[in-house]
Length: 188
Image 1: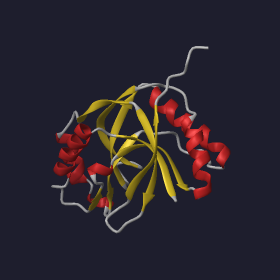
Image 2: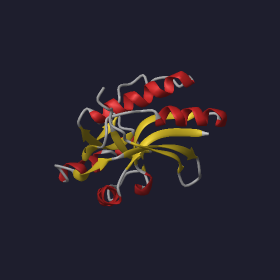
Image 3: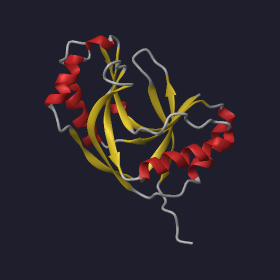
C-alpha cells in the first residue's frame, strides 16, 4: 500500500486556501488543482509499504516523543523547482523548529524498516496545483502577487497521522490508518 505521514489542516485553514485556489483558477493556464479537503502537511512520503510492515511502522511512529503541540502559519506562495521552470504551485508553511524536528524524528523512526531518508532537505509546503503547461505560469504569478502578503491563517498542530494513498481517476483518495498525538519529551 502507498503510504505517507502528515499533519491534517483544520477546516478554517482549508476554507481560506480554497478561496485562494478559486482566485488562481481564474488564470488562463492548465493546472491540475488539489482538492482543498485533501491538503495536508507531508512529513514523510513512504511510498509502498508491505501490509506486514504496517504494525511495526505504526509502533515506531507511536514511539515518537516531542515536540508537543506547536503553531503553524500558512503564508506565502511559490513554485517548485523555481519560477523559471515551474511544475508545482505551493503555499508556504512557517513554524518554529518543531516542524523540522518532527519530520526528522519520523525519518529516524522509519529508517530501521528500510525506508530511506529523503535526499532533499525538508521544505514544508502545501502543494495546491501541478502545472500541465509550465510556460503559462505568469497569469498565476500575477494573481499571487496581487494577494501579497498571502496569509491563510495559523493553527496549532496537536497530532500527526499515517495515511494510505489510493490512486483514483479523480485524484488520490487518502485513508487515515493511525493517529499519533504529540507527546512532549518528559524531563529526565
